[in-house]
Image (tube, rainbow, N blue to C red; front, side):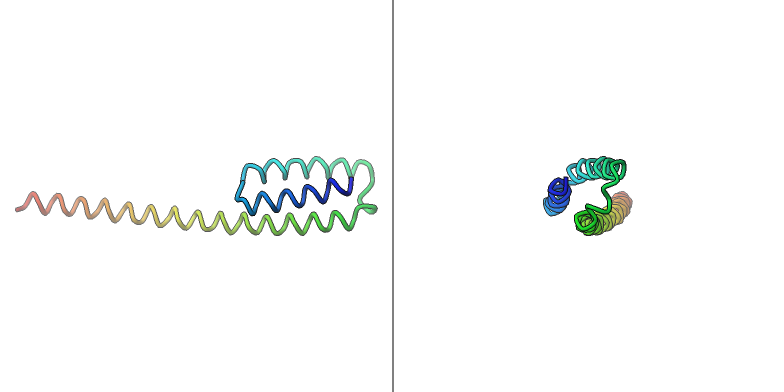
Length: 100
């Protein structure tokens, strides 16, 4: 099972590097299922080192996701501001042309 833990951590980090957000979600669900199974089998102590490594991978990927979310949110805000400016300019141009 410890190899599976490490593979999931590596797959999670690779999905983040590839910016494959759907794959991150799928891997995260698999990790959740695995953690439930580990807890039910009482293997937490035996797998502590591998679980710590998985936790660190998960934290790195979560940070990447937050950063990408923030970047996307900023781009959306910039787009909305630019759109509003263009609309205002278009209205100004139309009214200016009508007055000539």
